Length: 358
Image (cartoon, rainbow, N blue to C red; front, top):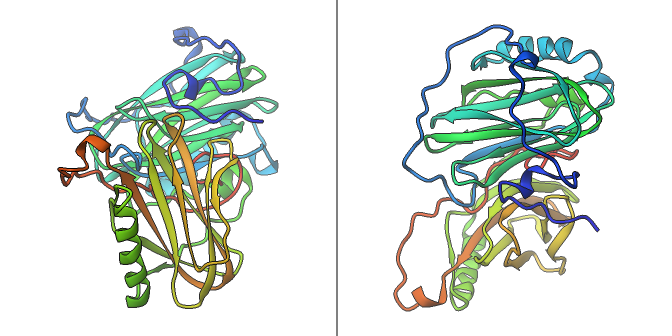
């Protein structure tokens, strides 16, 4: 059985390696291509959202396929042309490592500012695979793309601060290039098709909650309040066909319990809900035949998880809500804390990325 993905700064980075070492790249192996201005992000004094990753997070990557052929430099040139055409600019020079050994880990800073999205991408030689993790200023993994020669993610932080990209050569050894890009939040990198050979990501159709479903949500709020669960944000709605899934990233903390709900809107007759580990294994699930589903989860380790809602029967909108359990000592005197959304944004897909499975 796979081990749950942990996000202590060590465990989150060392997937698939018994005793890797963190190294600083030999400057003789690193070659800048061309430079652009860097971001002035600063260290930031405001902690990011503790459970949504501080903003929108999207990940890509999968097993290398025909679309990812070519040397790392050739693929970097294609990425550069593609992203510039979509309104992205490179932050600083691209970096080359001539011979990264299996198991070694390196780190690159992302000085982030609200209102902008960042796309770190690594491109390694054919026959190798890499793991890419993004760590937030609080030391939590907020996105990952693993076991691919072309890992990439997209993060849209809601606060200023220094994030870190950590790369590990998980299989093989050899050359890789790393580059960081930024753009306004409205810009979609659409890298899945370019790097993974996947179809372009379909647009998610959102929905506004109706009065009947709102009433059931209020009943659920009251029920969970008896267990000291407080809903932390308004539910979001997406339209699904029969059998369709919608996934969202969860950045959860050990020592806190959570509840999540999927409520079927008009046309839905049976929704199911799953919590998946960082390795894609089902940890908790509600597969009852009811129109609504509820799961409760107290994570054994802080880390990145995935919430999957499924339209098992019917079609139409499904509304997803997240709750946090109040600590026992604070139950008598609750305070209104600004926790932000429990559930991060994603745009769906497949593969082995930890946030958006492209």
